[in-house]
Image (cartoon, rainbow, N blue to C red; front, side, top):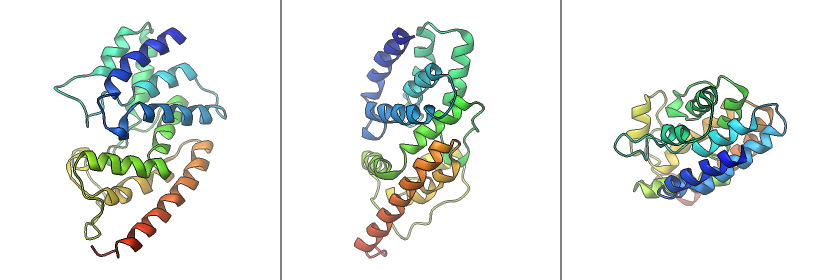
Length: 210
């Protein structure tokens, strides 16, 4: 199994090396760490979780080019059973937030990977990633006149160039209440409070009206 993991890593890293700092290989390493911390308190298939973590962003629509599907290509290249491939795809399919339109996890493995990924979207690292992605897309740091959107389609969520600060209200501050596991909920609470403190300070430093 370790050989399969190593092969998967080699193929995936070539793709993540093309992404900006918000979704690079370090992101995968942190999600892996989160998943292992949660897995220590749960009973689940660690192998499926590891492969799903490694591949969960390789076909991200934000970075996909020309209809490419690296996720399927890499999975097909690995020595996995048909059942393992289906379960890994199922896990990955429930990771994304998609503007609040994501698929609910159907297994403990999916719950763990979803929690692990969302934990990396909040707290200090979540703040850093948000501004890294916003910078890569040329977005404003903040716009206090901008109203956060509530209900929206996945396309609306992905396409509107809202400021990085607005993204906190449209996604990041909502993630704490989406956690599935006890460990995920516990970690998320501290990171959520840190983000609230950050936003309060950001508003103070920018007068909240610029």
